[in-house]
Image 1 (cartoon, each protein chain N blue to C red):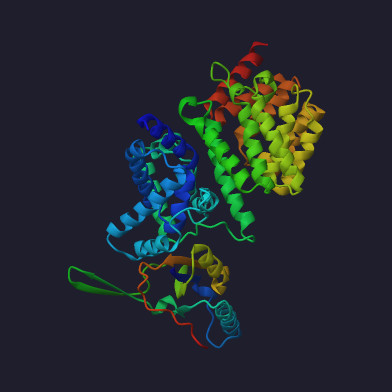
Image 2: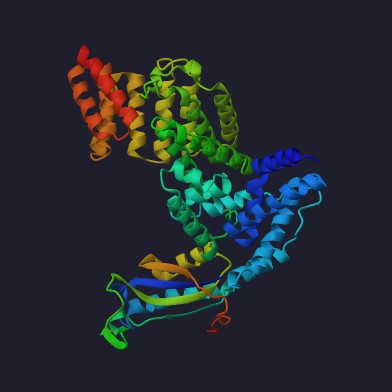
Length: 413
Length: 125
């Protein structure tokens, strides 16, 4: 047995089974740090042992068994306290070896619900989920959220301790609690995705990976909870958005509107995957906000151009979305779609109605939507004033640069 | 796990003992305790006298300083506590939400730092 073969087997194991092994140990000990240390011990043992003894038949089961044993050793060496006593008792009580067929227990769902527990602060939920379930390292998470490694490490230590000390259950919630808690998990995943998506124009090198991680989490959850339409809907929604990643920003870093994006460069494999998830979700027959948003994204993805988009259907879907989850953001999106369906004047009327209902809502965003409709309607002076307001108010540089370019075009006319 | 539930409650909503509102409150707590008994949940706990009865003591440089009133003047004051034995935080959240004062104040859940505390015995009455 060569070192290289053992090394390759270990690498594959880290890729495919790490989260499962961690989840299994955390479930018994409630201690994420201990689980990671024990896994590191087991991997070190494999790295030195396997080249001599050969790769065991079930490498993941071997590593889990050794990691559990090392967790027991570590607990025995610790200064005794109530918590390690309880963890030790639990480890010794539960069977030490995985089932004979070598299949690993899959407790990642339990771990995901624990990491996204509402008793944890939102930033702690995100950090824990990325580390424990999405397998990111602390430096990677720190880079993704533009914080220092020290600060992120502290956040993780606090969150890990809270998980253990507060008795946050590492369980799938009861059926009564499931919808609400699942909504929390989906919220964390979508936040991770949006963090990556929003930043992909600004700093593509460090942050776009968060989109991939969020999609991986969505896919995992789609396997673990295959009959939850919102899980499938969110995963499809993220895939639809991500399919457009390459066309959202031009070579100069300027935002490109949906209507101007090069549809030939949209990622068809991702769109096909999303369509498949959507079909499954619609078969279940319950609808939720993520599923409706995924339906809207699907219509965009299948349209040959902005003009040849089923805007009537999109307006109707925004109506359905607003019934499920009323929000000024959704109302504004619906007004924009009305502008595409019935023309700029109808769109402006719809935007003004939103403005009347929510006078304080995001003036920069409202101005940007109005500017576009005014430009389409040929009302150049009003459009220029609206662009200036939007540029002054919106925070994202890629978008501001785009709006400045539009304003420049109007000024040249 | 052993949890303490700290009942923070606006004191203007506490009623004079013997008044109909007070008796209605007692009824609600009795119903809560009956529900705990029905679920076979062991607990301990007491209501506290309102905060004007509080005395705060600090020892600084060997000197004992006694002052009138609670630790902090807040809108919601500690008005009672339970110690309760439950499997995990979700169970504690469920029970905390059933405490009658949760609808008027805030129930803070704190895990006890030690598991060596004496066994809880459910009050028989």
